[in-house]
Image (cartoon, rainbow, N blue to C red; front, side):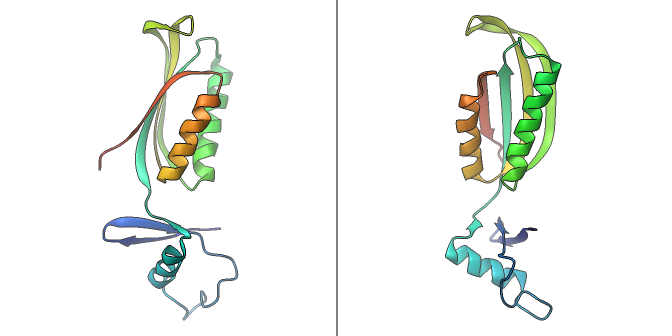
Length: 142
């Protein structure tokens, strides 16, 4: 279902209307009125934020594994209404100090936009991915 976008006081809102919502046809309620109703009901997220993520993967992960991880990350973000802007693979680099017996790490960097709750879910998920040695998730200043 296509989300509706609306901004209030410079804060973007994203609303997912139910398919059979009354009055949403031609001549029906405006998007702004509709989103205001959903926001009051708690069906809208308050805002989408820009984030930057740096991940250090195990050097044992091959190119196919790195592609699988980037696909899993992209799918995670898009399923939660976000967008992935930039995804860079930096390759294997020497670490400043050993991490879990490894002296090298495979670096990834991503920029994406998602709501804060999904960012918390992503952080919890990254802790469970066995290939991830370290990660850093920061909110970008706007």
